Image (tube, rainbow, N blue to C red; front, top):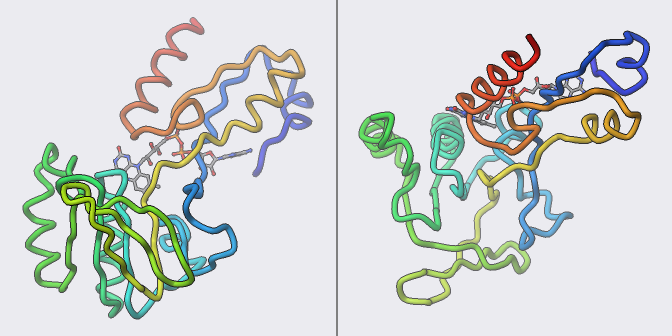
Length: 194
Ligand SMILES: Cc1cc2nc3c(=O)[nH]c(=O)nc-3n(C[C@H](O)[C@H](O)[C@H](O)COP(=O)(O)OP(=O)(O)OC[C@H]3O[C@@H](n4cnc5c(N)ncnc54)[C@H](O)[C@@H]3O)c2cc1C
């Protein structure tokens, strides 16, 4: 059920805690009408089915890019992951997932290219700046899948604030982070209520 301000008002709660998560955000350089540029969530929920040459952009350094890359490689796509970072999925080192990802990526033919910053798109050409050399390199994939910072789904929160409701928010609805942060937010807010 999708909750809106009218539903909240109907239930007459003493307080409201909004935990609506986040939604994909389009980077400035990605044309809104480029249907071949999609978010990882579009792929994982089955809204789109990238195939052929797929470029995955990792700006999050966690499971988002690597998991969707593996999924698409398993489906037969030719996958390259690019990242502005020095390592694809750099935070997977912390969880000891990186080494096993490297082994699986090698087996699945997933290539990884680092220190590449997306600068823009012309037609189906993605311009990337190689940080260390300042050289522009290009890719022309069939699909570009974005693992980039999302934006808070805070519409309901602001709607409720405007009604004067006693409302708090937790998790990605405050600022998109990771699951542990949502749990910590929830614990803090829950403790503050008693
Ligand atoms: C592909 C992917 C992989 C990730 N991998 C990891 C990982 O490995 N480790 C990690 O720690 N984090 C990971 N994250 C991040 C993690 O999922 C989020 O930080 C975390 O889920 C945030 O929790 P949340 O409760 O704030 O929001 P969410 O988990 O997004 O939950 C919000 C819920 O609210 C619902 N909702 C929104 N609006 C309404 C409404 N109006 N009415 C009713 N329901 C509504 C949404 O449908 C959703 O079910 C990943 C994220 C993605 C997208």
